[in-house]
Amino acid sequence: MKMKQNILIVEDNLGDARLIKEILNEFKISNNLYHAKDGEIAVQMLHHEGEYSDIPRPNLILLDMDLPKKDGKDVLKDIKLNNKLNNIPIIILTGSAQDVENNPYAKFVDAILLKSTELEEFEKIANCIQQVLNKIKK
Figure 1 (cartoon, rainbow, N blue to C red):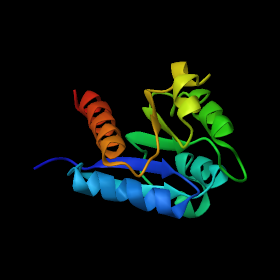
Figure 2 (cartoon, one colour):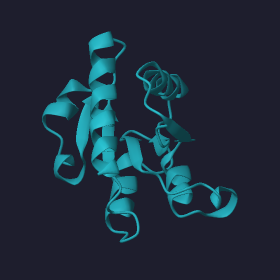
Figure 3 (cartoon, one colour):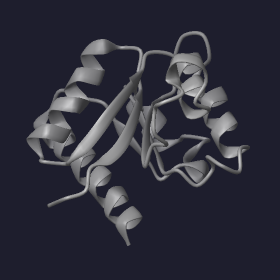
């Protein structure tokens, strides 16, 4: 039996968040999925603040950079500057192909992937998530 991984998706677009959940299910990536709809909620979840005190530490963070309240850049900075969080793998999901090619945050994350409705891109996302999760298990 596969052990479920805790995955935090930080995404303000509910449709994109739902698609990612479907990708994980379709490709049988066993997980407990937690969703933060903005950067402030993501930070509260990561620090177990208030109503998020019972949320487990994620094994992987899927991070959109264009977020309300606190953008992805600030969430990433918060994670990387915190000794309890800075070793959590992060995959940036972006809607811009240009952001995939020339992303200044590439050295701080495990991967940068393009959000898309194309099956081929779904497979890339699923394969990348699985590779990162496999590294964690080792």
